[in-house]
Amino acid sequence: MDRELGRRIGHNEALFREANEAIERGLWPEQEHQQIRFRCECARACGEAVELSPREYERVRQDGRRFIVLDGHEIPGEEKVVERHPGYLIVCKLGASGDVAEQLNPRD
Image: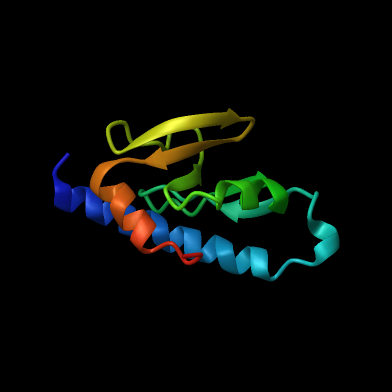
């Protein structure tokens, strides 16, 4: 995949990460262990729901290159599946898309 396409993929996924950050900010403290509907952070911009707890989501956010996606929404060569969970995957962005993901990380 060319570098420009990798940048666009990283940018698309960063936009969905921002939406999920807003979802998490709107939660009450007692919802920490409940299953919450976040958005799939895939580059396809599918907008489908991914259910996980805010605590699990927070763990993913500790690395600016990691994203939550539905199974089958990962992009081989641009990201590596680092964890599999019922209903979703955690992927780590590689190359140019990973660089963009880190640059656009709202927590840095």
